[in-house]
Length: 68
Image (cartoon, rainbow, N blue to C red):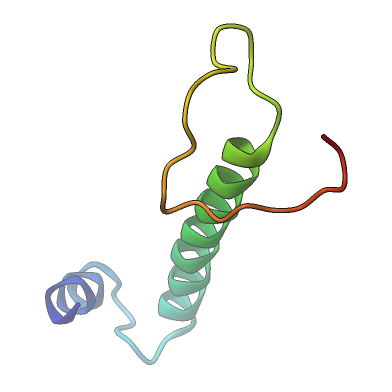
């Protein structure tokens, strides 16, 4: 994590205290959150043709939607 922050600090002229760092941090964290939530939603959705019998990864939690 230190290496990542050090590289971002060198890439942004205003450093860690400027508005550019906050904006970049929001974009990075938002992308990670969206990718994670999207992955869980995709794994819990109905399977496309040919994927009906595939097993859900253990990492993805089961969500009870009330339908069979």
